[in-house]
Amino acid sequence: MIDIDTMTLPNSLTQSGLILGLIYQVSLASSNSGDRLSFPNQLIFGIGGAVLGIWLLDIMRVAGRVFLQKEAMGGGDPKLMAMIGMWLGWQNVLLTILIASAIGTFFGAIALLTKNLGRQQAMPFGPFLAIGGAISLFFGKPILSTYLGWFGLT
Image 1 (spheres, rainbow, N blue to C red):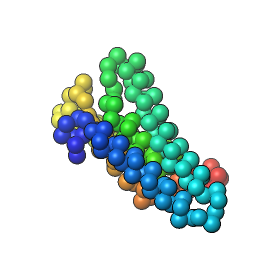
Image 2 (image 1 turned 135 degrees about the horizontal axis):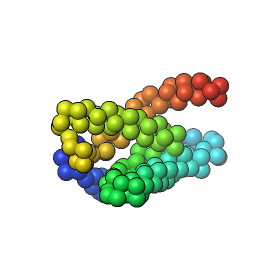
Image 3 (image 1 turned 30 degrees about the vertical axis):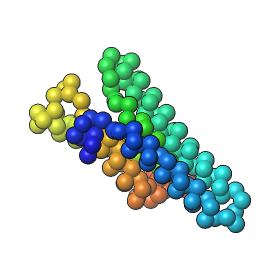
Image 4 (image 1 turned 90 degrees about the horizontal axis):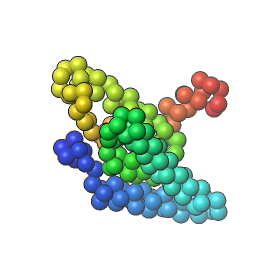
Protein backbone atom coordinates (compact mmCIF):
# COMPACT_ATOMS: atom_id res chain seq x y z
CA MET A 1 0.00 0.00 0.00
CA ILE A 2 2.94 2.33 0.68
CA ASP A 3 4.15 1.88 -2.91
CA ILE A 4 0.71 2.76 -4.25
CA ASP A 5 0.52 5.93 -2.12
CA THR A 6 4.10 7.21 -2.38
CA MET A 7 5.72 5.24 -5.24
CA THR A 8 8.44 4.21 -2.78
CA LEU A 9 9.31 1.10 -0.81
CA PRO A 10 11.06 2.17 2.41
CA ASN A 11 14.43 0.54 3.15
CA SER A 12 13.32 0.00 6.74
CA LEU A 13 10.49 -2.22 5.50
CA THR A 14 12.47 -4.26 2.99
CA GLN A 15 15.57 -4.60 5.19
CA SER A 16 13.64 -5.65 8.29
CA GLY A 17 11.71 -8.19 6.19
CA LEU A 18 15.00 -9.52 4.84
CA ILE A 19 16.44 -9.93 8.35
CA LEU A 20 13.25 -11.59 9.60
CA GLY A 21 13.40 -13.95 6.60
CA LEU A 22 16.98 -14.88 7.49
CA ILE A 23 15.93 -15.54 11.09
CA TYR A 24 13.06 -17.67 9.77
CA GLN A 25 15.45 -19.73 7.59
CA VAL A 26 17.84 -20.22 10.53
CA SER A 27 14.95 -21.33 12.76
CA LEU A 28 13.79 -23.83 10.13
CA ALA A 29 17.31 -25.21 9.86
CA SER A 30 17.63 -25.42 13.65
CA SER A 31 14.36 -27.35 13.94
CA ASN A 32 15.91 -30.10 11.79
CA SER A 33 18.88 -30.53 14.11
CA GLY A 34 19.16 -34.26 13.34
CA ASP A 35 20.12 -33.52 9.75
CA ARG A 36 23.59 -31.95 9.68
CA LEU A 37 23.10 -30.74 6.08
CA SER A 38 19.86 -28.98 6.92
CA PHE A 39 21.46 -25.79 8.25
CA PRO A 40 23.62 -24.95 5.22
CA ASN A 41 20.92 -26.08 2.80
CA GLN A 42 18.33 -23.87 4.45
CA LEU A 43 20.67 -20.87 4.43
CA ILE A 44 21.53 -21.46 0.77
CA PHE A 45 17.80 -21.73 0.02
CA GLY A 46 17.04 -18.35 1.62
CA ILE A 47 20.18 -16.43 0.70
CA GLY A 48 20.11 -17.84 -2.85
CA GLY A 49 16.52 -16.66 -3.22
CA ALA A 50 17.40 -13.19 -1.94
CA VAL A 51 20.41 -12.84 -4.22
CA LEU A 52 18.54 -14.12 -7.28
CA GLY A 53 15.61 -11.82 -6.53
CA ILE A 54 17.66 -8.65 -6.20
CA TRP A 55 19.88 -9.51 -9.19
CA LEU A 56 17.01 -10.30 -11.55
CA LEU A 57 15.09 -7.15 -10.75
CA ASP A 58 18.25 -5.03 -10.81
CA ILE A 59 19.06 -6.45 -14.26
CA MET A 60 15.52 -5.61 -15.39
CA ARG A 61 15.88 -2.13 -13.90
CA VAL A 62 19.19 -1.43 -15.66
CA ALA A 63 17.97 -2.94 -18.95
CA GLY A 64 14.86 -0.78 -18.77
CA ARG A 65 16.98 2.31 -18.16
CA VAL A 66 19.25 1.48 -21.11
CA PHE A 67 16.54 0.55 -23.60
CA LEU A 68 13.88 3.06 -22.58
CA GLN A 69 16.30 5.90 -21.79
CA LYS A 70 14.50 6.53 -18.48
CA GLU A 71 13.92 4.86 -15.13
CA ALA A 72 11.83 1.75 -15.72
CA MET A 73 11.65 0.56 -12.12
CA GLY A 74 12.31 2.01 -8.71
CA GLY A 75 15.18 0.98 -6.48
CA GLY A 76 12.88 -0.51 -3.86
CA ASP A 77 11.45 -3.22 -6.11
CA PRO A 78 14.68 -5.28 -6.27
CA LYS A 79 15.00 -4.97 -2.48
CA LEU A 80 11.42 -6.16 -2.02
CA MET A 81 12.15 -9.09 -4.32
CA ALA A 82 15.23 -9.93 -2.23
CA MET A 83 13.04 -9.98 0.85
CA ILE A 84 10.49 -12.25 -0.83
CA GLY A 85 13.32 -14.48 -2.08
CA MET A 86 14.74 -14.86 1.43
CA TRP A 87 11.39 -16.15 2.64
CA LEU A 88 10.36 -18.27 -0.37
CA GLY A 89 13.58 -19.47 -2.05
CA TRP A 90 14.89 -19.22 -5.60
CA GLN A 91 12.22 -21.27 -7.39
CA ASN A 92 9.46 -19.11 -6.01
CA VAL A 93 11.44 -15.98 -6.93
CA LEU A 94 11.08 -16.94 -10.58
CA LEU A 95 7.41 -17.76 -10.14
CA THR A 96 6.75 -14.55 -8.19
CA ILE A 97 8.34 -12.40 -10.91
CA LEU A 98 6.35 -14.20 -13.60
CA ILE A 99 3.05 -13.83 -11.74
CA ALA A 100 3.75 -10.20 -10.76
CA SER A 101 4.65 -9.31 -14.34
CA ALA A 102 1.53 -10.98 -15.72
CA ILE A 103 -0.81 -9.32 -13.21
CA GLY A 104 0.94 -5.97 -13.60
CA THR A 105 0.65 -6.17 -17.39
CA PHE A 106 -3.04 -7.02 -17.13
CA PHE A 107 -3.85 -4.16 -14.77
CA GLY A 108 -1.59 -1.76 -16.68
CA ALA A 109 -3.36 -2.57 -19.93
CA ILE A 110 -6.75 -2.03 -18.33
CA ALA A 111 -5.58 1.27 -16.80
CA LEU A 112 -4.32 2.42 -20.20
CA LEU A 113 -7.53 1.40 -21.96
CA THR A 114 -9.71 3.17 -19.39
CA LYS A 115 -7.44 6.23 -19.46
CA ASN A 116 -6.69 5.91 -15.73
CA LEU A 117 -2.98 5.78 -16.59
CA GLY A 118 -1.05 7.68 -19.22
CA ARG A 119 1.48 5.97 -21.50
CA GLN A 120 4.45 7.65 -19.83
CA GLN A 121 2.97 7.57 -16.31
CA ALA A 122 4.69 5.38 -13.72
CA MET A 123 2.85 2.51 -12.08
CA PRO A 124 4.00 0.92 -8.80
CA PHE A 125 5.30 -2.64 -9.19
CA GLY A 126 5.61 -3.45 -5.47
CA PRO A 127 1.94 -4.41 -5.01
CA PHE A 128 2.19 -6.86 -7.90
CA LEU A 129 5.35 -8.37 -6.39
CA ALA A 130 3.50 -8.76 -3.09
CA ILE A 131 0.54 -10.44 -4.80
CA GLY A 132 2.89 -12.69 -6.80
CA GLY A 133 4.75 -13.57 -3.60
CA ALA A 134 1.51 -14.44 -1.80
CA ILE A 135 0.36 -16.64 -4.67
CA SER A 136 3.78 -18.33 -4.72
CA LEU A 137 3.64 -18.86 -0.97
CA PHE A 138 0.26 -20.55 -0.97
CA PHE A 139 0.18 -22.17 -4.42
CA GLY A 140 3.82 -22.25 -5.53
CA LYS A 141 4.44 -25.97 -5.09
CA PRO A 142 1.40 -27.13 -7.10
CA ILE A 143 2.01 -24.51 -9.80
CA LEU A 144 5.68 -25.47 -10.18
CA SER A 145 4.85 -29.17 -10.01
CA THR A 146 2.23 -28.83 -12.74
CA TYR A 147 4.56 -26.74 -14.92
CA LEU A 148 7.46 -29.17 -14.55
CA GLY A 149 5.07 -32.07 -15.18
CA TRP A 150 4.27 -30.65 -18.61
CA PHE A 151 7.89 -31.28 -19.53
CA GLY A 152 8.16 -34.61 -17.71
CA LEU A 153 10.51 -33.17 -15.09
CA THR A 154 8.65 -34.22 -11.93
